[in-house]
Length: 499
Ligand SMILES: NC(=O)c1ccc[n+]([C@@H]2O[C@H](COP(=O)([O-])OP(=O)(O)OC[C@H]3O[C@@H](n4cnc5c(N)ncnc54)[C@H](OP(=O)(O)O)[C@@H]3O)[C@@H](O)[C@H]2O)c1
Image (tube, rainbow, N blue to C red):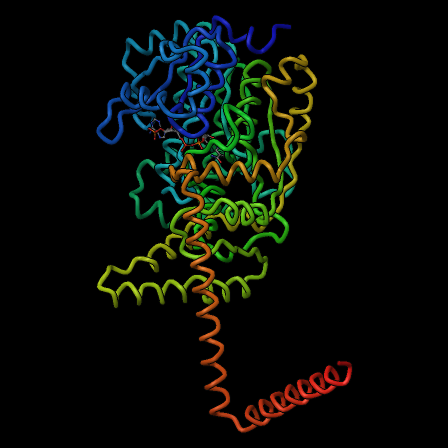
C-alpha cells in the first residue's frame, strides 16, 4: 500500500474553510508533508474589503507557514484560490472554476461551517447543511473523485451518553426542515428553534447532526469519511507546539483566566473540556482521506496547569491574578460570580467613573458570562465515544506514516501540552512579546499587594462594624485579646526562666 504522502502525490485537493483555524493547519500540513501534492483548490469568499486572493496570500504569510516556507519558498504556487460564497446557490462558483474542479479534483475536505453556538437556525442550516448538500452535488459530478472527507463534531449526537461510530437517525428529515424554514420569517424561526433543537444545547450541534445525515443520504457512490473531533485546541507538535489563532472555546477561557478576569466556572469537577490538539485532528483527517475512517476522542485536562503556566508566564495587563476555580455546584458558582466577577467589576467601573474614564469592566464580564454559559453544557457533562475505527486506521499505517501523520494521543504529555497551549495563546492570539514577561510578573506582584491591602482594609472594616454593634462580639473580642496576653506573658516568663 502506498504511504500517505505517496498517495497524495500528483493529487488535486479541494478544501472548504481553508481560511479557518483547522483549514489553515490542513493546508500547511499537506504542503509540508505531502510535497508531491499537485494543487490545493481552496474555496474562499472576499471578506472585510479584502479580495479572496489577498486573503489567501495574507494567510500564507502567517507564522504557521514558516516551516513550509523554509523548506519550499514556492509553496504558495500550489494553492489556487477559488471564489465561493457557500451560502449562495451553486456555492457561487463561476462556471469556468466549476468545470476546472469537476475535471481535476481527487479529494475533497469539507471544513467550512459556522461554529457559533448561538447562530440563528436559518443561517446555521444554510451553511452547515444546505452548503454541504450543494458541495456533495458538485462532488458527485467530479470525474476523478476518490474521497470526500466531511468534518463534523463529536457533539453532533450530544443528546446521547454513549456515541458509536455510526450515523444516527436525524432529529428531523433535513429536506423537510429546509422546505419548512424557507417560507418562515426570522421571528417565527426564532420562536420554534427551542422546540426543534429539543435536547441538543444549540443550533450548531443540531445542524451538524443534520449535515451528517445529508452526507449519508447524498453520498451515492462516493467514498465518504466523517471526522468527529471534540473541542479542537492549539497544536501539540506541528508545525510547532502551541500554535493557535482564535479565542474560541478553551483559548478564550484560558486567556480570560490568565488575565485574571475569569475566577469561577461551572464544570464537571475533574474536567474542563474534551480537548484534542489541532495537529492530531489534521493528521487523522489526512490519514482518513487515504483510508476512510472516523475519529472520536475524549480527554480531560485540569485547570491547575493553566493557572500555574500563567503565573509563570503572565499575560500583560491582567485584571487580577490568575486564579479560576471549577465547581459543579450551581449555587457556589453563582456566589463566586457575584463575589469574584461582579463585585470587582463594579468597583473597577466606579474607579474609572471617578477618574473621568468610561466604565467597561461590567460589559466585559457580561460578555464573558454569555460565552461561558454557552460552554457550560459541554463542560458539565461526560460522554463516552467509541473509537474502534480510529484504532483500525492506526493499525493500517506504516511505522513511517505513524510518525509523520501521528494521531496517537496516548503519547501526549498533557501538562506540557497545556503549558504550550497557554503560551501559544499569549504569543499567537494576543501577540504578546515573551521578553515582556518580567514586567507582566511585576504587574502581578502589584495586583497581589493591592489584594492584600484590600482584604486587610475589608477585615478591619468588618471588625469595626461588628464590634461597634454587638455587645457579645465585644465580650468575645476582649476574651480573645486577654487570652493572647496571658499566653504572651506565660511565654515571656518561661523564656526568662530558661535563660
Ligand atoms: N474548532 C473546533 O473546536 C471544532 C471542533 C469540532 C469540529 N469542528 C469542525 O471543524 C470545522 C472547522 O472548524 P474551525 O474551527 O476551523 O472553524 P473556523 O475557524 O470558524 O473556520 C470556518 C471556515 O469556514 C469558512 N466559511 C464560513 N462561512 C462561509 C461562507 N459563507 N462561505 C465560504 N466560507 C465560509 C470560513 O471562511 P471565512 O474566513 O471567510 O469566514 C472559515 O474558513 C467545522 O466544520 C467545525 O464544525 C471544529
